[in-house]
Image 1 (cartoon, rainbow, N blue to C red):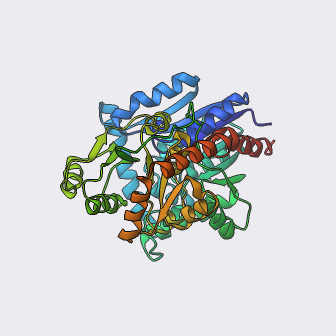
Image 2 (image 1 turned 120 degrees about the horizontal axis):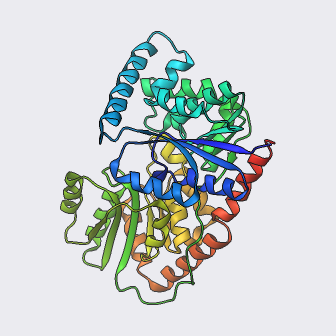
Image 3 (image 1 turned 120 degrees about the vertical axis):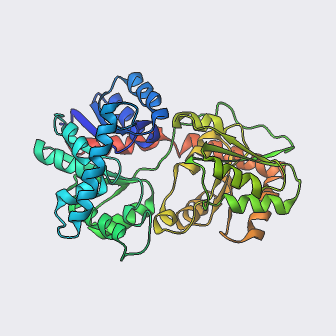
Length: 403
């Protein structure tokens, strides 16, 4: 009988909406939740505790924000342990060494998790995987793993690289012992299923619908494009969008970007624009993004095809836009092509690197009848199909099957 679950992540819970949604679903089922996480960005600390206090979750937190002596000491110690583990990896592939190589805070997080009397420990990223494994082993409990990405190909496709080998070894050392594995997209689920010859459930990264009423038809005076991420950076498809807008000339298109951005990157994007049509917004809590997105016309899902993980992931961007009831423009990665084949009425897809394809898509969105139809379908799917009310039942059924 699953009475208590320990959720583990290597970062802030405020930046892990998937973990938060699972925790809420478990709480609603009367299952006690305790979370182990790490804080390293001072501006997110308040958001972490706002979520915790809202749901009254127990928690264990490792703090290395550097704002006091203790956090500075933890950060310094974790750096030494991490470097020692990387050096030792050259001579030994022991699971304990692997654990410290993929999570510089492994020792501290494991020290928290092992003191929690949970029936199952659930890891929410690669670094959390060894924490859940070793804590469950010590507690004679079980552990699960949620693969939001295909981790071994998350940063590089070079199988000879140290990072690829290290990540592969860590997954191979711990995943075969997991009570269950879930994945954030059907293609990520498929690839893990093929590697480990076991069932991997796909739990989509969807949200609760926020559209209060269907969109109304009106002329498009200023087509507003929207994109968001934790950080706004180069090489993520934004350059293509800006080039397309420049090519179209002053046709009343705005580009709105939400996320943390460095001064140098902000200057970089502003200099790419032929006139002032890009707007920047500071980060907001993940659960507020769909509501914020609803004020725009088209959500941009500009995933790249490399590394391989980007080609097969189905990010929360797409589902955020559906939840907000706005049209969607997708790049033609494998995962997004599959999604578009089944849901083509929510927007358009373009070929990465094909400027003519992208320009035609933006021109088409400027037709108010077409844009209205896309928004209507997006809002419909966000309410009727791609929402957490539905996906959470799959997740809870999986957890209950472990009883």
